[in-house]
Amino acid sequence: MLCTLYIKNYALIQELTVEFTPGLTIITGETGAGKSILIGALNLVLGERASSDLVRSGTTKAVIEAVLKEVHSEKIKSLLHIAEIETTSELILRRELSTSGQSRCFINDTPSTAALLKQVGDIIIDLHGQHEHQMLLNTDTHETLLDDFARSAPEVTAYKTARSELQELQHQLNRLKKEAAEIHVNKEIVEFQLNELNSLDLKNSEDESIETEITLLENAEALFSLSTSLSELLYDNEHSVYSSIASGLQILEKLALIDKRFEIHVEETRTAKSIIDELARFTRSYRSDVDFNPGRLDSLRERQLKLQRICKKYGRTLSGLIDLQNELDNKIALEDNLEEEISHIEQQITRQKAELSKAAITLSIKRHQAAQHLEAVIQEQLAELGIPNATFIVSIGYEKQNEGDISIDGKNFAAFSSGYDQIEFLISANPGEKPRPLVKVASGGEISRIMLAMKSALAGSDKLPILIFDEIDTGISGRVAEAVGKCLKKLSRLHQIIAITHLPQIAAMADLHLQVQKSIQLDRTVTEVTPLDHDSRLEAIAGLISGKDISPASLSLAAELVAAAESV
Image (cartoon, rainbow, N blue to C red; front, top):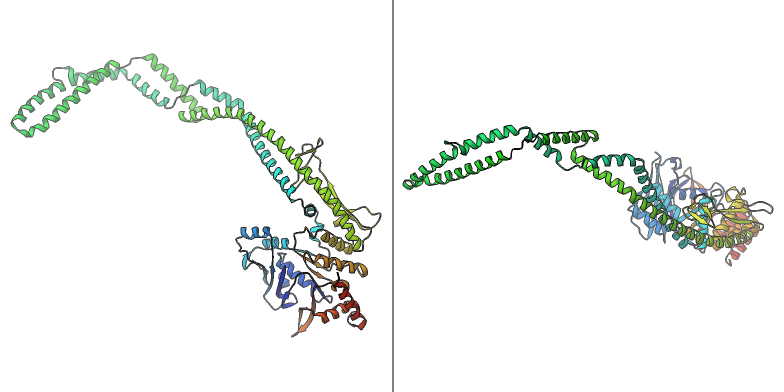
């Protein structure tokens, strides 16, 4: 519920606070007094575009603040949570506009964006101007309004879930098919490369071992000659190193018997003798194993050349080629696996399309049933509002597609975000006229009454708690005006209603009557808003009947209208 609206330095308003109550609030005042300024200020605090021209002349900043209570909206809570704005028992929307053109927005005293302010405002307040019936004239909302009337939220959720799961499966299928296509295009190349690498029987570090063996074979004669010389030096001739160390050891042992300081050197010499003996044994064995094999050398050189060529061809090292070999092997295996996976996903998609079609049919049936009821309710409301011959149609169509996701009786249809139905409200206000879209209804008075009839029909399901009507009485009078007033009164039992009117029949229905007046103060024009008591309210209604010259007759008629309104 909108509790208060504070406005400072906005257009003709210097500073005022307007307090609202539940039920029906009626705003009246002479033309030009500033009634629409109130609506403009409210629009501004709800996030509409702002202009620095609206700042009252002689001031630097305009401020509009709306305080709302009992706002029970999970969507608003979610929006504020995402924006890291604290939620409280009150919802405070604030807009500041400077003469420099800068605009600042606040929600619950926390800086916000105008976009977020508008999102929040659109959820809690539905503001209807004379030619701006936002929700009802927007075809995109007709589906939502019908679903609200039909109480089909569970069916809509089931459909959206099925559609989301189908889209995810289709996304997986497209990804797998793309991968499979890429592999298929390169399949011949992959197979050729894999066969070429497989034929070489590549082994890790083979190039290094080949290089080592080639070096040994190329130097076989030198290795044999050098190892022979080393063996003779160490052990095989009369004055070998081994013989010399052995003789020296004998002398050291004798010295150690006399002087203990030689004992440590005896042990060192014995170790040296063992080392020389082991080295001599290794050298003799090595010499006997030296391989003189020209055929093996040629074979290794040929293998080395093949490896060098294949590495150069692919621009990789030997280990890189082995990695490539594994990659190619995996690609070949992947194509087979992808075909199996694609087949499995396609089967899932077929089943999911059947589930989606079932959900779409269930939802559509409920919408058709509700549409028939809604048509009857709207036409009854329009008759009460002075359009007795109106024809209201809820048009439900479909879009056929050759390969649509929804299949019914062998025909395929497009799957939209909330069903396969395309819903639009059509109206004919006069006999013989073909029903047309609401946006094409020419008469402003008819638009207002059609909109009011829609709101009355949808009142129990409409999630908007606050409805604001700016001059809903355009083009009507007399009995129709009375009917409109009664309709607003009844609607206000379910929603807080704020309406600007010039008609006494509507003004008499008010639970709260606000009078907008314009005066001159200190040579400046000022707009003020005054809540009326019983007597001043009768005078205001009488003024709507007879103008400035209020007569006893007009006061009497005003009293009759108020008394009659109390019985509605």
